[in-house]
Image (cartoon, rainbow, N blue to C red; front, top):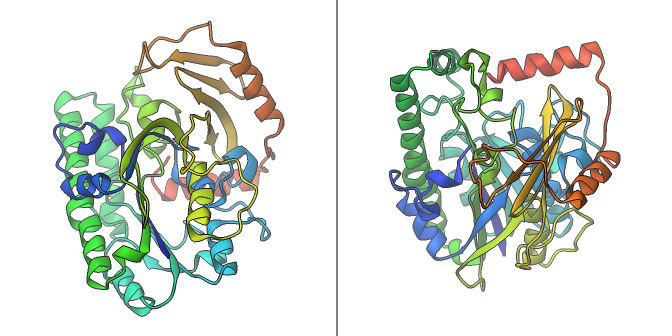
Length: 388
C-alpha cells in the first residue's frame, strides 16, 4: 500500500461543503469524503504550521516534541512517519510551500520541491509509481494572501500588507473582500489542486492501492477576536495567537483500501495521524500521544500555543468543555462548547480534573529559554513569512 497525505494549509472545516459550508463549492473534496471516512471533530495540535505539522508526523503534542519554531534543532533519533516508513522499506518524499521552512531538519522527509504547482509532484509520482511510497504534499493555496504564489515574493508580501491594512481599517467591505478571496482560494484548492492531484493518481492506476488523507494543519480567522483591529499586525494574529475553534477545528478525511465510508462524530486529534498510517501500512508502531483513528472512541485533545518560539498557551478540549491556560500569566479561559460554540462567554465552573490535567501536562512540557540571539532569529523568520 502507498500513503498520500494532502495538506491544505489554513483550511477551516466550516468552509468545506461536506462540513456544512453553504456558500463554498468544493465538489471534489465532498466526493472524496463520500467515499472515505470524514471526521467531524478533528483538532489540530497547534494553531500554526511548524508545531502542528511536527505533531502530525511524530504523533506527539508540541509541548512534548519541542519543535516550536522553524530553526529549533531536531533530535535525529525522533521517530516520524517518514523514518518509520523508510525503515519499513517504503520510498518517502514531500512537497512543501517553501523548502527553507517545512521539514527542515527532517531528512527522511526527502523534500523534492515546492507544492505551489502540481508539475513536480506529478513527475515524482510517475518516477515512483512502482515503489511503495509515503508522499506528503503541503499546499498553500488556502493560506493568506490566498491568490499569489509564495515564490512571487514581492507581490506576496505586498498582498499580505494590503490584507492586514484592510483588517486594521475595520471596514466591512474590506472584510467581505477578504472572506470572498478566501472562499475563492478554497474552491481553487478543491477543484484545481486536489482534483488535479487525484486525477494523476487515477491516471497512473495508483488510487486503488493508496491510502489518501486530506486535511489541514490549522484553520483561519480575520481579526474577529480583536476589539481594536490595530492590534492585528500579521498572519500570527489570524492564526497562531489564539486557540479558538475557528483556528483549531480542521477537516480530516481518510480514504484507504478496505476502509468502509462513514462519518466519525467523536473527537480526534491530528496526533492520531501517524499511528493510524503506520497501522494501515502494517509497519511497527512507535510510542506517541495519539491513538489510531481506526479506534473511534472519544478522546480529549490538547492544543499548544507558541509565541516567538516559546510555549505560551496550553488547552484541553474535551467536549463539552474547552479549558485554555495562558502559561505566563496563569490566566484561564473555560468554555462550554455545546452552549457557547463560538467561545464568546468564559465560565468559571470547568471540571477541576481538566485543570489538573493541564497543569500535569505543563509539568511534562519541553520548555527552553531562548537567548536574545535565538529570539531575534525566530522573530526574523516569522517576519519573513509575514507572521509579524
